[in-house]
Length: 243
Ligand SMILES: Nc1ncnc2c1ncn2[C@@H]1O[C@H](COP(=O)(O)OP(=O)(O)OP(=O)(O)O)[C@@H](O)[C@H]1O
Ligand SMILES: [Mg+2]
Image (cartoon, rainbow, N blue to C red; front, side):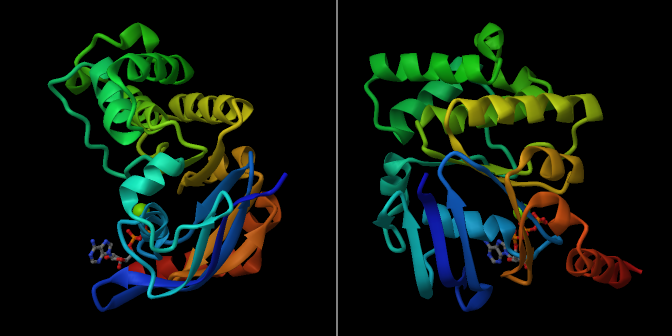
């Protein structure tokens, strides 16, 4: 299988503040690619560059064979890049189904009829089908996370970006999220998953990148990366700063 995504020597940031420094990595089609790194190292910023919220000042982003470095956000969404946000922003007064339908109709540019089918499919994959008529504001945290993923799926992505979907969940709920990610992988989605919950990164990913200060510190198989001296030091360094 080929590459679904490559970042080559990307510099990017907010205004004059550069956050990503010469960031390079690549994701294979159909894999779950894990991303770890201390708070503020630029993981979510990498997603922002990937969906076109910010445009790199240097380097190249190739998605599905196309140079998307400067492509508009809406176009990238249509091309098949779908993300969840670290802080979910559901329409609380709308039902779960309506929330996902909005993503399908506006994000993926579907007609309402097509959008309904896509939305129902996304709700089945995230095990929210039976809760589709509940108001989004009434969901538990786990179900909000599920809905956030369903909304991303509503845009019919080839590449799904998960930003800390396991944060704040109980251990049993984390297991549910891991099962859902396994189901999504089986359904042939390529996935990049940012997470601080170590267990998810060791058990659910095919490759793992640890970022430090906007750059790839280490990339490889999950277990050796997680157990490496470099990764240990980067996290110890952060703990030292907190003291
Ligand atoms: N919209 C923004 N404008 C300016 N600076 C920002 C913006 N968003 C993030 N930053 C800064 O960019 C840096 C990287 O933030 P980012 O959110 O990418 O980190 P992260 O690795 O996702 O961290 P966390 O693990 O806490 O989610 C931080 O210093 C942050 O304060
Ligand atoms: Mg983040």
